[in-house]
Length: 269
Image 1 (cartoon, rainbow, N blue to C red):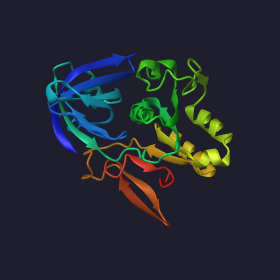
Image 2: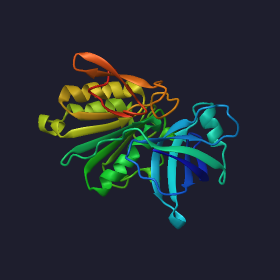
Image 3: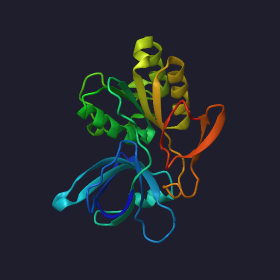
């Protein structure tokens, strides 16, 4: 974790739903897929606290500097102010934060599930799996076609049968909830196929809950990236705790510190 003073390179809206923000940094940053940053840049101190954004991409800039990208949706005052910033404006960041996805096991088959803006969290995992030539598929869901991520953002999107899109109104891809599409696919897996499957998911809590229960019933693994509200972002305030099973007892962990990625079997949904 480190504090960085960046500058916005671009902050572009896509379909009036998502914004993609790129910032330059004094030096490159490395991150694990699923980690996030606390970001602010608006003038004044209202709102006082920065906003947590999943790290979408990070790279090498010019002259030894670094770059970092985020995809976000305007959901409140902080992200509304963020969407109004322009190239050249300063940006304050604390990154990388939290615990990301565990992609260290060989021989696993991965399903990546992104509901709503949750795709921004699972796409970096897809990019890493693609570099490793691992076996993976993606399931992307939204209410309507305008809320799906652009195809050019999708890692591995050109491979036939790898990316499955669905909308609740049927305007793009399969008709229905991404939750139902994933559960239907799981229902036809053999015991051996389910045992080597790991699901990486981010999205609405109810989506995660339903998929987690289906995965557990089949013996499939699942890692869930939670989207709890955060205040400080690095574990001081304890404002983002989640209940986890600890044997026969219940314990509490900070989403910003011990998460945001948890073993879905341990979460008290």
